[in-house]
Length: 485
Image: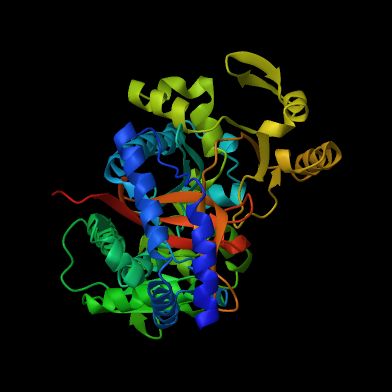
């Protein structure tokens, strides 16, 4: 134990001598200085072996007790949360909400111009799913915008509009990190605010259900959290079930095969289901839908309220960013939306042998892809977890050409322009119980509830892919300010 503390002190002392580079966005100088000083102060507190060791032990115990495990490993293997200033939180929230208003317009446009579904990559079978009215207006009552916040830019890279994970995990992590001895000491100098999302998720479910019914329900609705079996996020489902039931709403966790649809009612083990909190992705449900049709049939017949609905597939496709950034759709958005899209949504196009525009210039897309490898990334239009992604600046010319050829062969890929990424030093827990500082890619993920930012968490990774499914981790996001004297 003493050796570990001594090692920690040496590492921390070495880190203290380094300039702390913190990603803060376009804040005024005072806020930049404040945030840099806050992170430096937090790291200096970790030089005290007793505080560091007590914090590490508290974090380990908290993660285990709260079941913050993803695929059998710790979800938050870091000893510092991500800090965002109040000014940046306000700015980021405003940007996200304007982008979301534009996204809702894209969904609305598909209802009058169904050809837009082709540009988004909606397949024939998906068209049948998205054509059903879920009984409420919002395309995705809950969503997550994945983004990078740097000193000079704030940029989105993806949208999870179908089944965003991490809400309950983030709340549990906020509770754990708030109890760390180092955080308690830190709060003697700084005001720290935690924005939680579980109660907002419940409000979204109940609000959608009331809109679906057209009235207030007579009794507490029964909620089913539905996904495939053996999902790495099953621990989060358990956190949600406990939260819902604690607030008076009976809840179950089940798989599609366990649902039954009979006499106009969807049920699980003989009990009627009123709300399906759908964590199941469409592309995961389609292969089993014929064997487990109850969910689809109940939704199709309007017999159950599903959140998010199958219509969320429309805006979950990565090609959504191609629509947002294509000049031919500019008139779909108002001035504020156009300005925010231009500043914060990366140029994106569906990959194909076609002509398009880039920065007011006509280009041959495939030629542009080859000659601008160092500024482009290739992604499947409909996948997650970092699968199938090719990063131009991390591959050889031959590998990049092979990736393009394969993407053209398979079809349904997007080409997206590189955005500035954020990196910070974080104290990471090692396998032997120690702590070491490591530079991490910092992916800030605001969570939206009915189009309003309510909470956020941050994903960290040593690689270019800040994705928990690809081996990264997450930390809670705290909003900080100086204590008023």
